[in-house]
Structures are given as structure tokens and as C-alpha cells.
Image 1 (cartoon, one colour):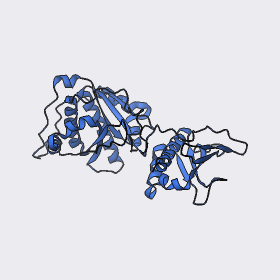
Image 2 (cartoon, one colour):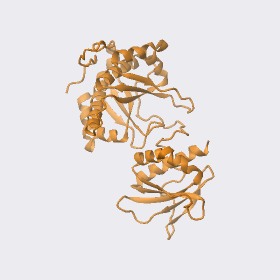
Image 3 (cartoon, helix red, strand yellow):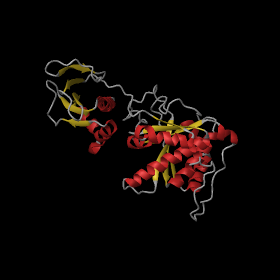
Image 4 (spheres, one colour):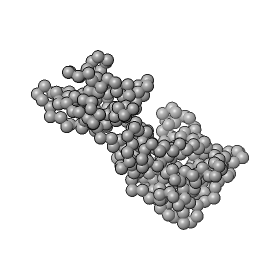
Length: 335
């Protein structure tokens, strides 16, 4: 496949706006190296990478762009989704985005999810959102009219020092999304405030996100494998910065599902871990890939009033699940 022409125009469908498209970026903007980032689920990330990296290698070869994914436990703050960053020249990036969205759409259809209007969430610095919105919302309104896609920009959240990114959600068919993305990319290429190059798709290492529900680099209050287990398999007790006590124990030899770790969490925090209708615990299970079991009310760790949480799975899955659980506990303690 040849790289897509910059002036993307979907096939005519008879609609009044089907032939409209924005002006192409200048020659300088087209050639200048830049980047764009958007969110993908953990499952989608796997399909983009492909077996042994075959799919992502093919997409890079076809487009000429560089495609990077945040690591499998680096999620955009407040979501269970990873970040994909595509860098290169304008044409190269645009072609890579098209290849990726086509792939994800075909997989949705294979999974009996034939909804033709899907969502893609672009990550855009707040300083560049004004250019997309335009005076009185004029620019974003014209983008919506010309692309026929729905475009929404998340509100700015100033509660987290150093975090300045917002999500631009584009909803529509593949053709509508690509038209809207073309317009947004064109505007960003012209914006002097838009960072042209980033070293990593996940540039949040030094930002404090306490209170966000799903940040991958949260260090567990109780480090995995930090306990010297006694002959009876019972570990010591650890006091975290909140003053709550967590007792950990190994659960014997690993079974077919992997290792197992049990620790205690104060009963008052279990609701925050489980979430409404079990939403939080389901999300943690999905993100980590571990199996999580919480003891019934009144079933406490020996000598404590802490409920037992047992995590089963590979060591990496256990570490991730525990980190996300302890983050929920920490956030609940600060309320």
C-alpha cells in the first residue's frame, strides 16, 4: 500500500459535505517531524503489536512512521487504556493512524460489534486545545460540519500539578474519523505551542497523580516479594504511610494459574476497591490479568480487622493488581 495522500477525502456518499476538506498543511509542516498520541485498550494494543511484533512492524513499514506504545502497565491517568504514539512526517503519521483504526474496526466487526460509529481519543496538550476550539468554538464547529464526526474535548482538570493533557474524542465511521483527524492534525501542525517531538508515549513520570484511579507507576505500599516468609508461610506486618497495617502471606507453591499472594486491607476501604457494582475490581482484574478474591465480611486476616485479598497469577500480574488496589486504598484514605 502506498502512503495516503495528505489531502484525505473519503468517497462521495451524496452528502452535502462529502467533498469538503481543509487546506493541506504547508510544505514545511508536512515535512517537519511531529507526533500524535491516542488511547487504545490493552486488548487493542495486543492486536496492534501482533504476534512477535509482526503487525506493528508491518504498519511501520507501510507508513514510514514510528509507532510506539506505552508499556503494558502505563495507562493514561484515570483510564485503563494505554497510549500509542505515532511520530514522523505528516503523511506518514496519517497513514499509520489509518492502518491502525482500520485494524481495530475490522476486529470489532469480527467480534460481532458492528457499530459503524466508533470512538478514538486523541491526547492533546491543553495549550493546543484553543487552536482546535477556535474563537467562540468556530473551528471545532467547522470540523464537525465538514467531517460529519462528533468531536468533544474533555474539560481541563487543574487538580493535578504538571498534568496538562486533555482528550479529544472523535466519534464516527472510519471515514468521518479520518477526515476529523486530518483537520485536527493540520491545526496542530500549524500550532507553535504543540510539542513536535516527545521521547516517550508516556511522559508523565514526574507528575503527581494521587487520586487518579489507574496510574501504572504507583508504587505499592507493600512491595511484592518484600517479605521473608516463615516456615508456616506467614509474612510480617507492614505499616504504610496511612498508618493502616497490611499482613501478607505466601500461598504455597504456584498452581497452574501462577503464584498467589494474600494481604489485608482495612474493611473501610474495601468498598473503594470493589467500586459500584464491582466496577473497580473488574477494571483492576482486566488491566492486570490477575485473579482477585476478597474475603467475606467478618473473614479477617489473623489477629487483625483487615479483610483478606488474595491475588493469583503471574508475578507481574500480581504486582500490577496490588499496585492498583493499594492506589484505591490510598485515594480513599485521603478523602
